[in-house]
Length: 245
Image (cartoon, rainbow, N blue to C red):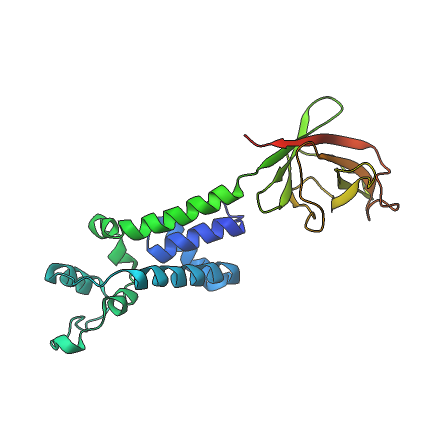
């Protein structure tokens, strides 16, 4: 992973670290982020909580003597894990909780395989999240030279984002303003302002749901945005939303 980690990168690494699947540089980075990065620590805490919930829903299964021997050998303590009193034996959930801080326990292939059902559950969660990230509408904004300059992705939950496909020169004292038009009577509405070409979440929450053929465009405006509430500068690129493939 690159040094500039997005929130999604941190969430994925936190999940792998919580499951004991992060190794090498990823594990070292996760340990450092856990100490230094509050956002990563929050992701990690949430994954620990999610995984504990999954464990709590699993039916109790008696562990074999061989498994307990392997567990005891992986724990960083000289205290025996198993009690000689059957009635005082901790629950599997309690035993399991003691293992989260022992990365060496999870690394043997056999024990990772034993986590297959848990990994599958987490994988299904990631698949659902990935599906939610896929846009349902896409607008390719074309320049006057008929070249794609940016993309607007619209998601099923109504979110929309601008993704530039390259650099867009912005003179000093000027800014890029993003507009959308779905009703000519209403006219174009500003949904974003940026001083540089960068990924930008568009402000569409208060607007009607985006529809196919809806226009998006970028104009060059004063640094504080159009003084009239309507486009005043040159149109740099524009395009209509279409259903995503």
